Every structure is written in structure tokens, then in C-alpha cells.
Length: 472
Image (cartoon, rainbow, N blue to C red; front, side, top):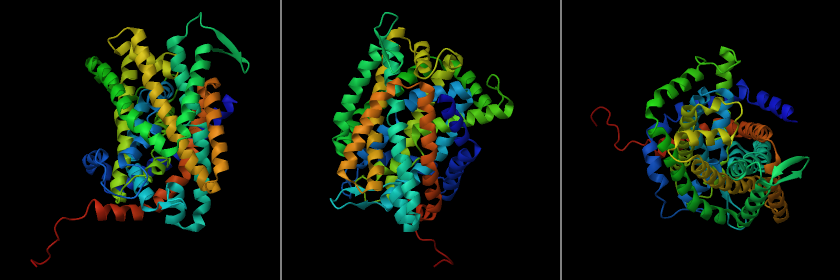
């Protein structure tokens, strides 16, 4: 089964999909006149300043934190490690390149989410790619909206939302608490430590309690946890980077050299090395920041705001924080340590080895810090994606209460069984559903780019003074 998943993953994330997603980022960057570079300062300002009035269910910052709760997860810790381990240090370069272009993509998603959002019969806000596909492109494209909603549901249930997150949590806890004397249980034909079983149960129960509370409950938890956990993690990685400044030039050389095949991964040809680095870097980058997937606009649509362009700017800061800041720090720490090349390490253990190498603390303390960060990162992602998938399902079935209850039960069940899947299978499944979800959303962003450009020109690039022609 793992071999089949790996082959599908390799085929789906080949050159065509990479070109589609990167091409969309390039196209939107040009058409929007580099909005992600020219208006980044304004975006960061809007990020922490909510509007005093506006339609919506949660504050603009709350909507961003909900989106960040879904994006800042195992992709920032485990995803970066698996990308570098598989594609070499060059994967980090392609991850960053995709993120810089993806900020324009994320901006477009946030803007369109507000532009085409609507309300249900109960007064609740409805928005996301399915609505800007149907209302922006027209009713005859509703099949594309349903395709997105279908794959979006699967991404939450079997990809980003459950398997990868709980698997990362239990792996980190197992590495920290377990030893050769730890009690082991035989489940599903394999042995698992009692730590894996207990931690899996605790996370499942805690997630269930918050998920049942809906978007407002998820938003409150996210606003409390996300800023703290992101700052704490970045501080730890900054300590590693600052205390190893002399090793930074060599690490940057390895990243640039690996990105362009100058330092090939063992056993790969020149072209194969570049393609492998690009494939793993872009795939894991998109997994982490979700630019192009269409998940963030589902949360952005609930923001209390009057300006679609303003919310677009706030939404794009998610990619900046997630990848340009957090993933870059993680990647540098891993490359500096050199532990990515150890064939005996995989997933979270690579990042844990990098922390043990870089932090001036005892190994046990380093492992504990990373475990706590990963638990919070992954837990909030579980919460955020439960909301995303629920919205996708509501679009498909009209918000049926019975369907929602069944979904909650299946989602919680997926969290429960996640710890017992292999790392390779978990990440392969996540990559496949991510790719399938991105296709209809990217198509819509390109088709609606004229509206995005018009709104951007009107609200962000408007001239302060009229042009005087002929001295009049």
C-alpha cells in the first residue's frame, strides 16, 4: 500500500502540477504588481489592527489565527525535515521561492473570499473557494466548486487535518518518554508503546471537546495559543541560528547548491536532483503554508471587515509567518546540524536531533521543548482543519445537522487511528489530497484574476492626487 501511495504521490506532484502552482504565483505577482512585496508593511500593520466595524463572525485577527492554527503545524517541524531529508538542502530554497510567489496567491484567496461571501438562513457567514467559484465564475462552474469541496473534505479527514498531525504528536511524545523498558501493546498486528496509545487518546478527547464548539470556540483557542506557540518556537530556533553564526555561510551554500544541482543528493543525477529538490520543497511548502490550496479563504470569509483588499493583505501574512519565518528557521537549524543526512532518522526525529545539536541545553531539555511546540502546533491544526472540512461538507450537503454530526464522529475517529499509520504513508496521503484540492482552486484564481486586480488597483494602488494633463 505504501508503494502504491508513493507512486501516486510522485506522479501527481510531477512537473505539471508544480508548474501550475508556481505559474499561478508568478502570474498573480505580475498582474497584481508585486502586491506581496510592495504592501507587506501595510499587511503586517493590518494584521494586528482589527476594524471597528464590519460584517463577519470573528475579528480579522481571529480569522487569521484560525487560518494560522491550520497552517502552523507539523509541516513547520516534520514537513521541513522530510523535505530536506528526501530532496537535500536545496528543497528549502524551493520552499521559500514557492512561498514568496504564494503570498500573491494567498492575497487573492483572501480578497475573493470577502468579495463573494454570502450568508446562510441563520445569518452565519459562508465563504471560501466554492463560493467564489460559483458566484464569481458563474453557476455553470458549480461542478468545479463541488470538486474543490469534495477534495477539501478529504484533505481534512485523511491529510493535513488528522493523520499527519496526530502522528507527529505521538511520534514526538514517544521519542521523549519511551525507552527499552516502556510497556508495549500489540495493536493492528504491530507493537506500539503505551505512550503512543495514551497520548493518542488524550489528544482525541481534547480535540473532540473543542471541535464540537464550532468556529467561535476554535477561534478563541487559536487566538490564545497561536501567537504564543509561534513566538516561543521562533525564539528557540533563533538561539540555534545565532549560536552557530559561523556555520550559516556553509549552510546557505548547501541550500543554493542543492537547489540547482551543484551539490547532488546521493544517487541522483543532476536533473533528478533539481527536480527532486523542487518537488519535495514545493510540495512540503504548500503543505505547510497552504497557498493555492484554498483553505485560508474559508476562515478569512468569517472576518469582520468591510474591505476585501484589506483582508487579502491580512490573509497573505499567514504565508509570510508560516514559511518565510518559521520554516526558514527550522530548515536552517536542520541544515546546520547536518542530521538530515542520517539514514537512521526520519520525520520529527531529524528536527529533534537538530535541536539537540544546536541548543545549549541538555538533550532531554531540547527534546522536551520540541515536543511541546509540536503538540501545540499540531493540535491547533487539527482544530482549524475540522472547521475547513466542515465548511466543505456543508457546501456539498447544504449544512445538514445530521451530516455534520457524522462528519465530527468520522473526523475524531481519524484522529484516533492516526498514530498507528507509518510516516511514509501519512505524508504520501496528505500530498495526494493537497494536490487534488489545489487544482480547482488555482484554476479559479486565474479565471478571477481580473476582479482581484481591479479591487487591488481601486483600494491599494489608488492615486492620492489627480494627474494634471496640459497644465490644467
